[in-house]
Length: 201
Image 1 (cartoon, rainbow, N blue to C red):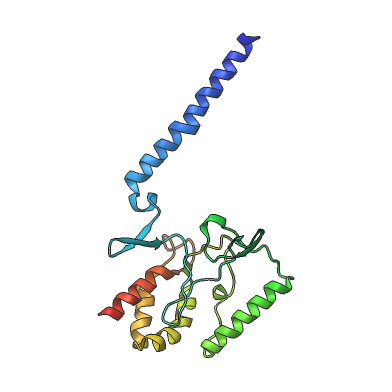
Image 2 (cartoon, helix red, strand yellow):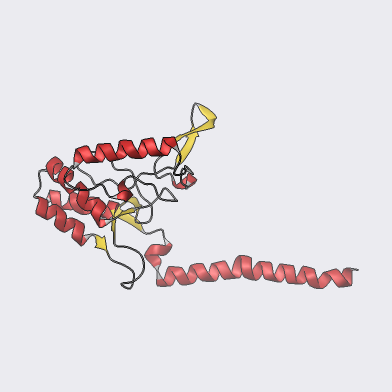
């Protein structure tokens, strides 16, 4: 019987070493050599300190910053571990709200967000990405329309010329991959960093 089982055990150990150890190490080494920034998490630094990643959104508050998409991520409630509390852009608990189109809670939240954004800028339609969450809850990007919608609020809060802020949005807009794949997008963290740098000049 051992003679029949022995080849299976050898194959199991061999494939485990190849697919579980050698292959992941080789892919990691190649990725680190070809794409070192991406392999290390696409980290963004300012003054030598890591302040975020280009791949994971952050919550920005205040009138002088561009805001990202809503995030439905949660964390355990410190007062009751059986419950959760909102924790925007919580990478340890990535996911959507799982609320469907017939959900009263979802419809109420979207209506509140639309009303708040219309009060902020009544001259333009509210872009859909400013009131809907992504599937991961970690989306770092918004549409160029979402960024341009926020320009009047940001310019007023910073007392900057609107043309300059619109220029920063255009400079931080990434087009479709190879001109075909995806949609144009603006990384909110990169845009806010560019805005801070422009304000310091």
